[in-house]
Image (cartoon, rainbow, N blue to C red; front, side, top):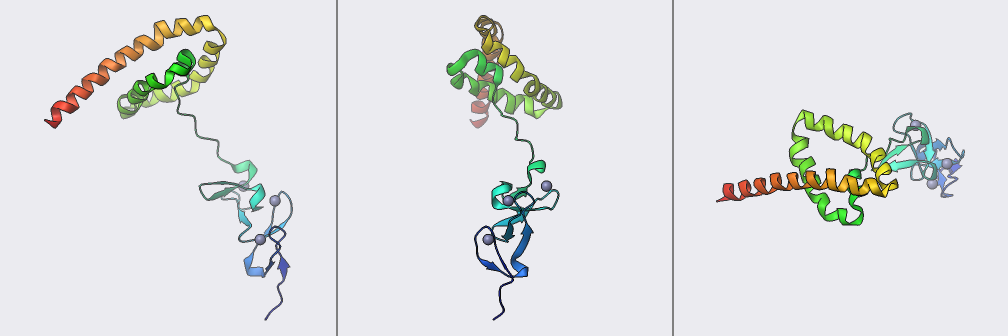
Amino acid sequence: MTEPLFFCDVCGKPIGRQEMVGRCIVCGKLACKKCGGMCSKCGRTLCQQHATIQQGIWYCQQDVPPPPPKKGCFIVTATLGYSAQERLGDFYWFRDTVLAKNRIGHVFIKAYYTISPSIARIITTYIKLQTFSRRLIVEPIGRIIRIFRNRDRVRVVSLKK
Ligand SMILES: [Zn+2]
Ligand SMILES: [Zn+2]
Ligand SMILES: [Zn+2]
């Protein structure tokens, strides 16, 4: 039996050269294959503790991909508050079935998610604006979408017949 060459600084187990991934770039701990890994972008060694693991892929602090944008409807939520949940269904339906299916819609979605968080913040800050936004923007649009959606439902039903 050959003597182990190193000890993993993370789990404390003796490791051979083959089972070693190297020293973590953050804490300098020597890590075995189970306790360490490599950043998928820059290839530098990280221990489990200092790596960000997303869906099994390792990233160092600098290479962590930005979080995906929240797919909420900021303006609707800000305007309607807690009662937004039930209404949101209509808006999501509109986004996913109508807008997402054409290029202009895609551009609109992207632009919307870029500007709407700031608009939503303004709306929640000024309650008066909240009423204004609800009466003049969210409710009328919601009504129009519902008409579209109901028409779509009717079509689906009649197609099934
Ligand atoms: Zn280990
Ligand atoms: Zn570390
Ligand atoms: Zn990296």
